[in-house]
Image (cartoon, rainbow, N blue to C red; front, side, top):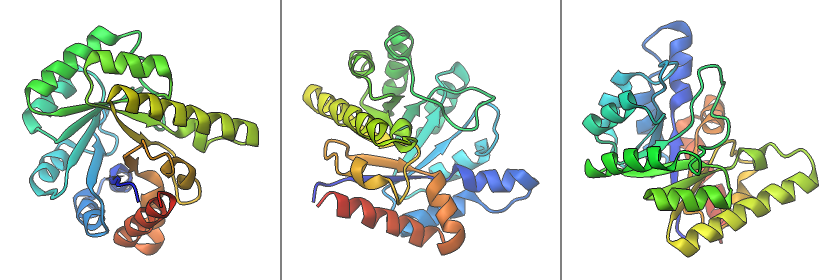
Length: 243
């Protein structure tokens, strides 16, 4: 089996908490349970509007996460400063709009390469690895590489949302071509967005993708089986697809 790592995004545990303004359920506790289930990384997205994860969550998780902490964030001065001070193991730069329900598409690195290059260098000077969340587009991959990113996370949402066999095959091929291109130029390749137990196998079978970041479907499944078992089940599904 080709080795892989699984990152679990616990944002939507915080969504439940913020819906009622309570102190529970605690995403910090969810992160612990995810690690017990086999998570290799905990991912959180500190949004500008603080709709789910709060600064407090980031501080506590930095002190308590036993695996790796991946901070998703917008490429802003405020967030870059927070990351530099908090020192997550990885920062994933993502596009962010206040009105969106979830991240819609990848960064346009090709259009804003110098901006991302500057922020990547700043974070790397703080001993933080940087990944860029991009669509499976060859121009974006080359731009990410030239900007100095340590890795890219390929946006798998278009594949997951495919409603016809033709679109399904097209989007899967795009992911495969993108992952192979990353491997050729030496860029670590991750995948995430919209993945669940029903659709993860074809993406997991792309061996050039070495890390998967999954959140919403895990939290949803955890409502019925618990976080630990939900994570373990996803890890088994990915492993089976890579045999």
